[in-house]
Length: 133
Image (cartoon, rainbow, N blue to C red):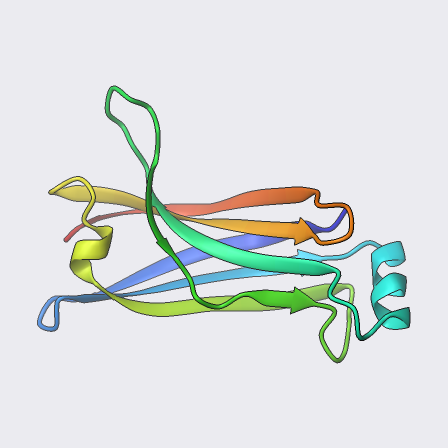
């Protein structure tokens, strides 16, 4: 099964505009067999990659808070399939979208890669970023 590696999130807060630019980067690594399938079936959608932002919960519930889903969705194969594909999710949000704790929030990205043939899904979290909005 394909894997997700080098999952990294950065936040850039513009205090004057009250916005946050949230960038999530990752690599998607395909097995030789998956790459063969993608090369031989270029018109098929075999994999889908999407990304969400979550707030890490340190409270009593222990459940993380869903904050945002990126509109961008990447499908594989692309026109030039390779063993490793790099992808970037980039959005500018109002700071209130990420202010889930009314103080310092810990935000992380959650990447989801779905094999559209087998419906097997793998997930990978990015680093967490603590920030006061």
